[in-house]
Image (cartoon, rainbow over all chains, first blue to last red; front, side, top):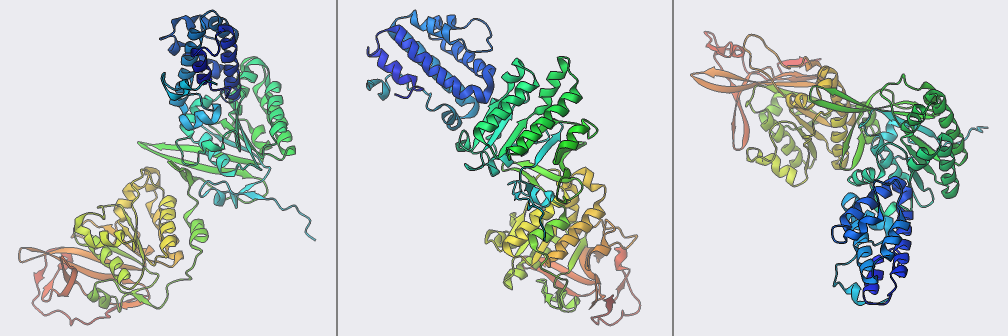
Length: 139
Length: 499
């Protein structure tokens, strides 16, 4: 599995392959670490944190509980906080929330620098819509 | 034995810049790109980077506290030279803001050196190093000393690692930070000259160690393809057209108006510049179109720079067809704030592309308006450079010029530029029997016999038709001729000769 492709993990979790929220949280955070490791050298820690913060705010619209993953404006991404929030939810909730957050991040970056450059920098981060074929393929 | 090192010069990928640099960018040079905000420093750096970076000679672009990297990527990819596929392959972006915020300048320098040692780039860009030093100064340091130390250390490291380096910095005056300028091998100054609503970008290479650069300010334009620099017209001729013509030859070109060829003594000598001056509507553009069409009929190609009516309009079907078939190239620059060097470069590019022998500029009046105000102030000099540049290519040039019909004096050129051209044809209106008639005369034809007659002409769908003199009249140039008591002199050709 592509570590950056959280959508597949989300889909797998939704189908009960990973039924432990803590394990799902750990995997999602690991994907975020790689995502940020790819991006932060280019845009800076603060630049990456700003993008993450915006993505979190967007994802909160459908998963309000994600708001607890960040308090106020941060100069770095607080991944332990994200891990804690995801772990506190059910496996399905953690997978769906994590998927939405990653999708928001990909769409945000795409809106700023375009899809080709986003893919070049991060690999594929755009999660498929619910019901898309990827969800049918357990990994 | 010559033991001097042969410095390899890199082609920058910026049209015109290599010529201004004196043959390209010296490899391993340590350069400063300076200028006020918005002058194009980042764009110039990116264009050079994407052009020069290869897998074997990768580039690192360090961003510091200037333009946020995301915005830089967002906007720079609008240019054609931007290659997203190159990123993280032959081009690597590294942000140093965190290093700056967390540590001092030495930390930033260590980070740059570490990245360079890790990736061994052949090209290094630091954008913008000055904001970095300014931030340090605000925290209590001496800006001048820190800047000098930082640049000195960076210069030593980058040269040792065989990296051609560019520092980008916001400077508004050359009086700023002289120690830095001293340390740099190359100094690129970008400027913006604003006058009324006009803005002209200019580049100056104030220094380039080891090679002679073209001195002075060179205009450049930022378009969808990126930056294009316009070297001086005279230099552009030598490099683009190869200066293929030694001068006018004995052969003559037909103008497309047979009786005019007769008046010229057999046509216009090849390589001459001809000014066709006359009031609005007198038929200058039609004569110019006939000149190009005759060239096409003789198997020659041409170029027209149109600054007035659009050549595609139906009234000029002849010219539109020539353009459509590719026999005549159209330089239709609607770009604002043209410089003489830019228009010469556009013309020369087309002349070279088509191996053209005939060039039309329609009209000088429109050309003057198209020039940026700062260039209009010395239009005669601009005209001189234009005519000289075109003459050096060996083409035959026809220029039209709007001439206000004043009947109190006899003028041939509104700009005092008549001496620049080899030949002059003047068209005028004359009132006869309550009708407005057209007439023309060959006023000047250098080193050649020509007619001295004032000849009537008409324009119809087939073009210009020259008829006879208006016999029995005098005072034609006053606009209202009177019937002469005595008959005029016989209508013999070759009545004048300019030396």
